[in-house]
Picture 1 (cartoon, rainbow, N blue to C red):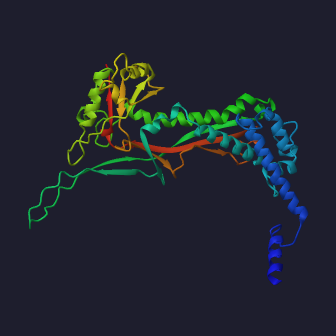
Picture 2: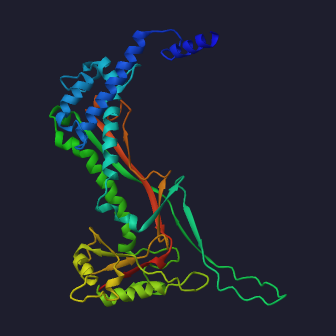
Picture 3: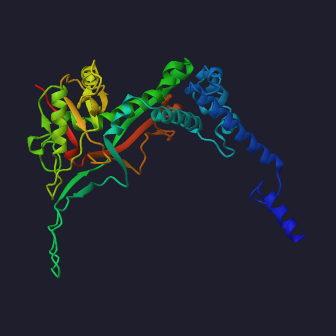
Length: 386
């Protein structure tokens, strides 16, 4: 009996911190929670064309009024229905001027992240770079040790001699912040500027993806100086050519990559290319190299069909490059702060600076933090065609 009473008391205590039942208080919280879910769904439907209720929410102005009670769209807290806004935001406690901004920011963030995760042309960098979490903004050092030469034979009762320890190659980088701010103004809400407001999270997402992809692919395009103080593609690295793309030059590139040697042991790696990187101008040429014409059996070159990856922003119509599978030779490392690969969005929540209530606008900040560098030139080849 005692156990049953204690169980019932514990159950009822969940409705209030004092342990006394107050259904009015509890019902108010339930209504706020239900309304906040409804309002969040309304904004999600406004931004997301795939949402089941998307067609039912066409006016951002109406959504704003429904959430805030500010029928004249003045942006002043005095013109808002505080009870309605509290419930829209899921709050039972005191309300400040940032609640609408927070709810709107959450929906914009969800739309931005969903668009960022959707496959696009900007995802091609994933065929080139490996990713890793980074814990802080300090310089990251990546040390790669070379290999050992062939093991020598040991005679009966003979001693084991010390092996020659391999050298190492050290690359470094630090993550940096990228981002900016965007605003939703009082005029945009008052004029119900649906098209512009809906495009904000989508455009921010695509800007972040494009910037990240170009950061990685620029290692090939710009040919930077790497850890050994030489250009990534250099005659001393054995990975620089000058011939226009055709079957002969592709065979030469493949052979050059197969002949790359392991640091320390100087043994050949024997790892050929997996990807062919070309500007849009060379996409058709690249496909034709590996296409059968009238021959019944594929030629040697045709049997080597790599993944042909056109890079949308490369403007040099003649240069091309090849890369090995990064599982065989990690060539470029991309580090994300705390492992967060997606951009973040923040609302400016200080009501005295840049808010709807002082400057007639809501300010949002997008932030994306990452960095990277070349770890090994041996898995890359480029032809710089005059």
